[in-house]
Length: 114
Image (cartoon, rainbow, N blue to C red):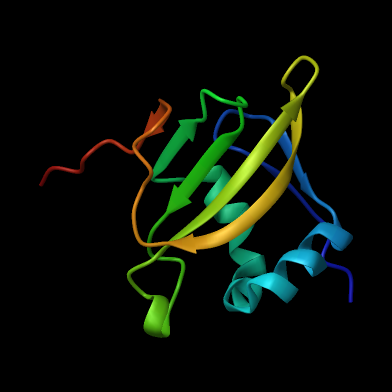
């Protein structure tokens, strides 16, 4: 089974996940395996995107994509963009129970009002 993924992120950029990278991560973090198909949603419709000031990687966070004992967790993916910034790759994925406040906010979902 191939775990390749190509999706468009919140900013209109193409992001890819390569099969060997996904396989390496599920060996280290087996809890993420059921959420492979949610990565496109995470990238296109995140709750928060933070840019790490150390390396420029973008951290995408999204609640509501996980279940069971991780139902309160954010699905989190780190994307590295190349060259002109029009495309990138997912470097890592994990489940996080908080948003790391370090970095520069690049997108925050507007609060819905009734």
